[in-house]
Amino acid sequence: MARSAHAYVRGNTLKFYEWLAADGRSHPHGPSVWICGDCHLGNLGPVADADDNVQIQIRDLDQTVIGNPAHDLIRLGLSLATAARGSDLPGVTTARMLEEMIAGYSDALAPKGSRGIATGQRPNSVHLVMRKAVDRTWKHLARERIEDLEPTIPLGKRFWPLSKDETRDIGRLFQTERVRRVATCLRSRGDDSDIELLDAAYWVKGCSSMGRLRIAALLRVGKKKNKASEFCLLDIKEAVKPAAPRSAAARMPRDYAERVVEGACHLTPSLGERMISASLAGKAVFIRELLPQDLKLEIDQLTQEEATKAARYLSMVVGNAHADQMDAATRRSWRTELMRNRSKNLDAPSWLWSSVVDLVTIHEAAYLDHCRRYAMNTAKP
Image 1 (spheres, rainbow, N blue to C red):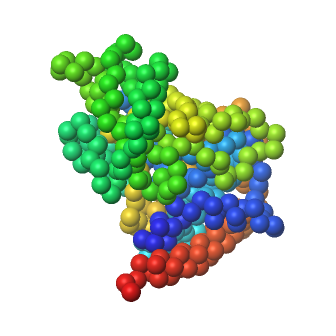
Image 2 (image 1 turned 180 degrees about the vertical axis):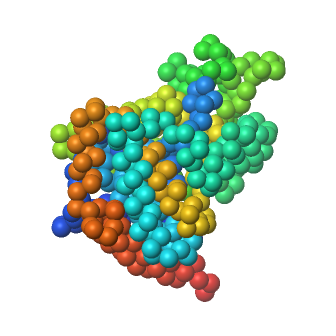
């Protein structure tokens, strides 16, 4: 998180919702739908379905709730604004990005809005990530995640050993038919394929693994001597209470892992169909196979043209995920509400502009304080 202001924004969801909970915040209250809850750039990217089709979608649903879709828009606007600042783009670019955000999101809500975004609409930065994702194979995933093609998980800084009890519990977990289906849901695998747990380890992976259960499990699908057998890497992740506020009247699963899976099924069906909820060591977890095509959208440097194109495209992706949960009348009403309070000189609604400006200021100060504390803790005696 000390790497850049953008990295700090991505890793500090709580700071965003502390701001949101403060008095005097003015933003529209949209229809109650499943939202990402942590809609920053890194949580969008290529996602493959069980038939190997790849699309740019929301790819991380840890914070998903039935809530206000405006929260996803504000979070995405903050992420784009800090990415623009990290690329040393002028402030006018941020203003244009927010304009394009609203335009793209509104297109998704329109009666003839895109219900699947054409390849030609993708900005170059996104198109390159898509091409990379489509060309990736298991070898790429293995070298990237476990650093080797051998059927073991190398212990070290990224992977820590499990206790005997933990290893036993994971072995029992994969003996259940319901969990087996995670490894056999791909079209290329038979439903009755043999499943063998080869290795498992605690996974030190970003902020989400600190103090929480996060396990990588390596499986063989198919008989060992069969040339058609495949390896698969599963991510077993503890689900926790979301920081994102839910709509007051919303009915969601009480089990945190079931909430994540249900949110994924509504927002990103191609991911949701590859996930299940379970219980491990008395904790709610959700399990999904990591596919080579599943990538973060990493945009380190943006030009002015790419920034505005990316803002429009990505907000359309988010808009489609929201709009798919609304009927025509609700989409029309929500689109009208978003267009209110627009200034004469700026097409983006004033609530979005003021929210992002406020948030950038707060996060910039918090980021510098974080870096100061990080430097003090890592200074040599």
